[in-house]
Length: 397
Image (cartoon, rainbow, N blue to C red; front, side, top):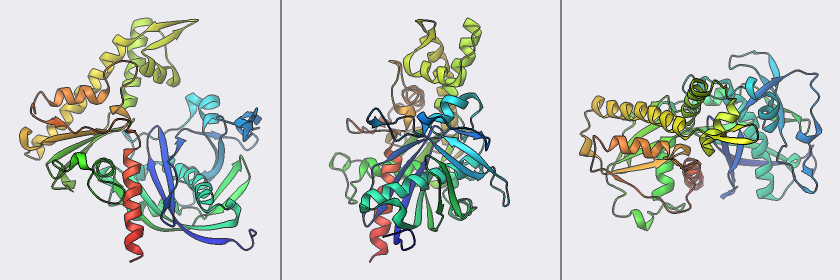
């Protein structure tokens, strides 16, 4: 088989565009790939930029190169006719251009408004092509893929499938400069958008085949609140009898990144020291900052930052209750998902702080437990994969 006579394939790309990372999976012939994590930092570079070999090599000393990065040529904005630019993504963008790199910020712009959505899609499509090739046991350059796309988004953007398709087809191809020079045609069919919280709920209480997980049989139809804590935003969804109340769903412009920003501010006030983005993120994870060869404890600053962000989110949720005239005892369970639900640095997680504050006005609500070993960061895309499988199965009937 050659590039002149490619195998035509219909596949589905499942994407979760996050603020800190993009999660991607591919489905073909009923089989799903593992979820792949893509960094979400992009750095504009000049055409004369010389890429260090360490970011291009597939292997270093016989092991997969964790620094391997990608460089794309893509439009610099979402308007038609925008000039193109070279963008580095991955460790190259983080390590070499950390302070000047561009990241999604859903607290400022929605996914449908951010140019990083286009760049991340190009990155995801390039990786998706490799994932499909592995599933089919073929070489990527022997495939001509038409993609249906399942996209995760906040509830406010679930009706924007046509908008996202317009973004995805803004250019006719993905232009990769490194680690290889290749042009990949963009062929997009259906674009469906699934609410993030609903997908996470589905992955928790239902099996991939669509049955109810035994542990949740007694509570799955009870009224449930899903709290999804991300890096840039925190979202709330209300579900009754397995159906989301879409009009009541809300998104608050505070997440894990807000904690890191406040830690930077508090450390500056306390120690007169400016933290880089990387150092602030490390501080939130470890509870310390580097001071030469030593480590300095900043747990007090982290606790203060987390408490301030949790107050804002809990007050927003309380306001959502009031705006929709929900009584605090109207909902039985809370399901907490997302990166903000993960405890780090030995301190209380953002989710734990928010839940504690919610119980101040809804004392009888119970946490819906998740199984040990569940990756709270990937529940949404796992749910989206199940939705995509279901859609493919119905399409074949």
